[in-house]
Structures are given as structure tokens and as C-alpha cells.
Length: 490
Image (cartoon, rainbow, N blue to C red):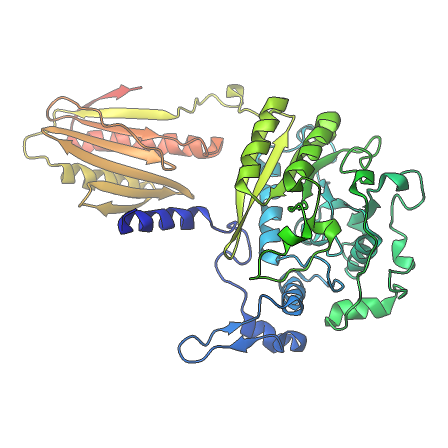
């Protein structure tokens, strides 16, 4: 592969592998120096390079350092008090926030039918499958959006520490319920484990205000030894969702690996994780396959079924399984954390809503164009480009002219356009492309100009109306400017 092709490949990968734009760290990475100045416990884990490369850093292979970073980020940027015992899975805040923002996008693009009908309009409810001792998804979801959660898990340590983290955040504590997903617990009082915080953890330490102080200060370590749980006796969704319950979404950070040896194969990071959190027979593919089977039983009781995926090959296999099942919608995305990529998979048994033409008398077309005919001798492509830019700018559109390629880069209210003018022999062509769609070059009669615009699939109905109005204004203005007849085309 040539160096230019490699460079192009890296550039494309960099564009795709971006954080969610609403992520707090999308534009600015966490400031370790600032955090060290505010949190003494974190300061001891921060070191500085020498010479020009003197940026603050932490040792990513040190579990204590990564755990302390998670604690201070949650406290500093989200107001969340948090801690986990040694050995439990330590989540990366940036990646977990990406997942929460993606859920928000799914709910905005296709809300649950009961919200569309005006029922319980303000209450969004989700299930976190395998919440872990960290309970990070419910804590972030409630802190950011005041969503309600049922947080499930199978080990006593995970359930008790999840409850401790919830109780350490009184402002959102009433929004999260911890629930055991062990089938053997289904008939017992431990099914809803909201009272587990009054008991003991596996070390015999009573869960009291002393434990909350550990969470607040980030000091001390609590053992997390636990008995191996037979995953055959663990429910995922069927048996966890109760009669009469319905949820806007479920989310899951599944056990990615088939063995602990496979889980520990990455020496570059130290995020901890127990066998119950990391390992499942058949790995993530089999775990998510069980989720899919459960979704086929529950169907509309959960509007969006979602999960994180660790391998792109698994994503392809599971997506194919979903289409075979006959779901109404499938969505995928990529989550990026440093050099690590994860993928998001979502599916629903409810078809996304379609825009009804009866909502407005204006029909939004995806492709529109008009012709400028009879251009006088000496009227160059540059003249037309300048006229087009002038008219677009007068309608509040940002434009940037590139004469080397006879193109105009255009943006309006967050929508990206690309406009190109191509002189072909004595023919002239202008294409106004929306959201990176490519237009074919149409040859016109000598002295004629075709201006064509295409509205991308990602544009909203309101954006489409604005787009059509601006295009009509530009058409009329160019006709007057060049004193030409025009003919609208389809």
C-alpha cells in the first residue's frame, strides 16, 4: 500500500473514530494537572515526562491509578460519588458516557410508542444488564438525564456495592433499583435488593456511613472475593422484567471473553474485572445471542434493546441474526476510548416513525434542481460560482470557495453541503450536495448551467423545509442576476 493511501486510510479512520459530540471530553481531554491539584489522592498517581514531553500522565497498567481517575472524573465532571473494591471491573468514564449519549440519540430519533401517545411523557426507564459493583450506567444516566433504572447483576459483591454507590448519591438514589438476576432468587425477598445495603458484604464489613466515606475520599481497599456463579442459573431479561413493566431501553456491557486468560491478554491496561464480569461460555457472541432470544419473547416490553460489542466480527454475526429474527429496526455505532474501539448494537420491534405528508402542505423533495440557460459569451464558471456564493450568504449560509476544484463548501444549521462546478468542454455544471452525498455530472447544452441540490437522508423534516426555501430563494436571485430564463427540473 502506498504512503498516500495509508495516510488517506488513517484520516478516514480518524474521522469515524470520534467521541460522541455531546461527550464532555470530545473537545478537551481530562486535565490531569487540574485534577491532581483538586484531589490529593489522585496526585500521587500523576507523573510528568522530561523535556518537551512533560505532559502529566498516569500508569494505565496500575489498577489503583485507573480506579482513582474514574473516581475523580465522576466527582469533578458529573458530581457522582463513587468507589469499587479491588478486583472489580473499573469502567472508563469517557467510553461509558458515549454509550449513554447514543441511547439518548436512539430515544430522540424513535421514542417508545407510549411517549408518542403522551403517556408518562417525562419518565424514561431503562435496564442495565450486569451493572457491576461500579453501577456506572445508571449513575451517569440519572445524573445527566434523570432517567429511571433497574440495575441487575448476579453476585453479592456487585449487588451490594452497586447499592452503596447509589446511596452515596442521594439526589438520584430514588431513581435506581438494584435487582438480582439469579433465577434461584426469583421467588425470594432478595429479588429486589434495595435493602441489601443494610447487610454485610463478603468481607464482613457492615455497609454503613464508613463505607460512604471511603467512596468520597477514594481511600482504602475492600476485598471482592466471591464464589463462582453458575451462569446457567442467571437470567438476562426473561425472568428479570416483571409482569406489567415496560422499559424505553436496556443496555449492557457483556462479558466479552471465553476465559480469564483471554481477558488478561492485554498488558497495556489494568481495568480489573472478575470472572463473573468478564467471562461467559462462548463469549460475547453467545451472551448477546441470549439477549436476542429474550427480546424475541419480550418484544415490545422493551423499546430499544442495546448492547456493547467488543469485536467487529461479532457485530456482523449478531446483526445478521437480528434481521433473520425479523426485527423492525437495527442501529449500530462505534465507541472510541484511546486506542480501543467498541461497537454499539441496538434493535427494536417497533418501526421508526415516518413523517406524514399530512403534517404540512409542503412536500419535501430529496432532490431538486433548476437550469440557467442562455449564459452570455464570456460568462465564466467563476462568475456563476461567485453569484451562487453571494446568494447563499445572503440567506445566512456559510460558504467557502475553492477555485482549484471549482467547488463550494457549504454549511447551514449543522448540515454539511458540498457544491461543485465542473466546466465540461463548453458545458457548465453545479452540484449542491447535502450531507456528503455525491452527485453525477449531467452534460447540458452549450452556455447552460444545471444547479442541482440533494438533501441527505440524515436531515430532519424541519431542516428539509428550510433547505427548500433557501434553494428557491437562490434560484430566483440567480435568475434576476443573470437575467436568464430558467426551467425547473426533477
